Length: 262
Length: 329
Image (tube, rainbow over all chains, first blue to last red; front, top):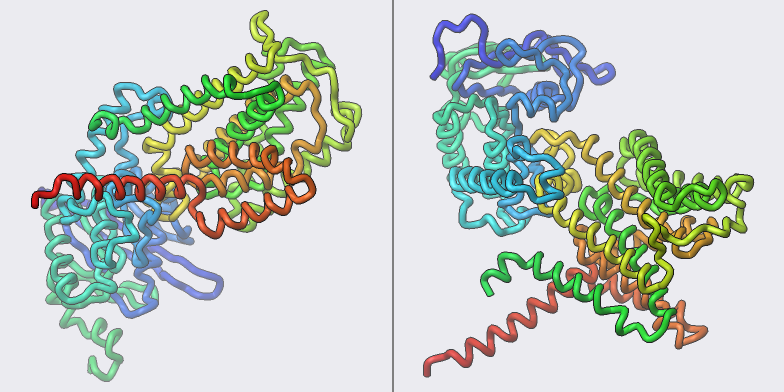
């Protein structure tokens, strides 16, 4: 249910600047996403897309700039604190817990929603059992949502690559994100898997989760995104609907070179 | 049967408790009982170490230092300052927890080999202090005259009584560790082991969890140390040096990382093995080393994995027999 005519967007970043020594990874980058929207961040290799995610989720400290979730400032918070605000990300190179089963991976995803403390664990209080049962239901629902229900007892590293991607998404969903950040979710997937992924991401958005996705696969991006932000050399060069982005001369120049755009 | 499968860990625990109760009746003399008590100290130590190393994936090469600090603090307080034993033990535990917090905060920022070096350094420093602070610790010759364990007027005079105190503590420590491991905390620790980044992204405060489990494991070592001091009634630095730390790591790895039963098995196995090998006289060290090498070659997952594979093979055999018997011609 997106309220139209909101004064400030749901989730936004402004003037984000990040430097590594002499290299500027991000230069005043900005983005804004409305509630319930799917925003894609695209750009040539090295444009700063993943850096943007790393800054937002507290892996790097930005030199300048701000990140807001509604009225809450999230600038340069620690990674786990960002997660507590409901911003959950996935990784381009899978970061599954390979020493755990599929189910345990997803249960770990629900870590923040386990309503019991260490003392409850030690003493096995009724609250422990009640909350664990609830977590298991939630994890089962997340696995069902991505279609991994039949594989919950497998070790995570026994999954083929395509399914491992789905597990990472299920794990993120178990955290009940307000904002889901997907870092190149289609990387390494074949055509059929990519198409299925696209439908899955749309279903996530329809369930009310706001999604920001960094992606290289243009068919996927153009097919499912509500809006697109284009980065080049750390700067935003375009921002708009997929149809507008496809016609934007600055974007064409960035991807294909100046002459093609002329 | 189905109930047993659902509550396998309770069945295991009951068997463990029964084993603890019964074992002294098999021990033919006082010496065996002493060996079992020492195995109890080692089990406590390895259980704690495994929480840090096996579950959270943080190497600690100075774990014997916590063991030693607790032993010495309780020894000094009770033998030199004449504190009651219970107060000495409690104080030693508090000191160990405080030291673990102070050491853990900077050290756990390190990763991999650097963390190993950091904890190794800590262990060496404690060992040197125990040797050199002669006025307080008695130096290399150690401290004598430590009172036997006395709580609320009751003294654990006999070794059998002490055995039950030690292994009762082990059982409780095991139960608590098992409850911890099978919870959100245990999952978070294992998550940190494989990917700190992914754990943090899901809201796990990785620094806090690492510190907490480090302090908890130091607490296990502290209890073991205090119980050691009031059993042997004598402490010297050699029990708590680098060799002791390495032996604890060996027990944890040989038993099976991230397996609590493995910790019990590893500690028992490596404590009892030298006693059995003693019959070989001059060759015992050689055989001991050979057994270690063979275990690591053929059981990389430790004794715990070996037992699991054995159980699986046995299960498959029984299943095949049952299948054949039930076949319809």
